[in-house]
Image (tube, rainbow, N blue to C red; front, top):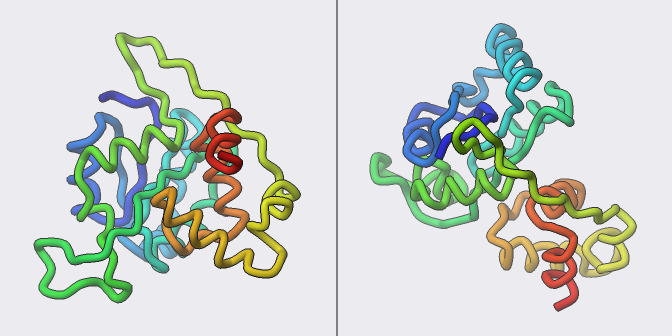
Length: 196
């Protein structure tokens, strides 16, 4: 499947899995190396301005630190966020599980990665023409509050349960959840998901 946006991942093993899932430009942050690499960041910004950029990091704390850094460094209208589910275990090449015991992007199947990229709103190229984008959701922070997912008693527990149900990473804040819901689901899907 060929997509328009470039994808940024943490490391070379992640890049290998993504290359099996989609056909596009794939770059690495070299983990936290991106924090000191102005040239690489400039390249990511340039790719974001010309093609669009999809950020696909591991669902652990380190992945969210890198994602947050890129979110602040690249214009919001040029970046999309793909999330792989929290799956506990260890990658085959490693002797022990990671600090949080979760599989990273490299531990996911190419199909799981492909679905995460599609849910993020990737532009699929088919014979030179783009597949029309799905309409985005229109939830607001007030909607999350009204649904009991932020700012109220037990909001964190409700949000954690929803994140598990949607197979989204547990580290997502209410703001990140709002962005993910609006990016991943149409208004009708959101209504069925949250009220069904």
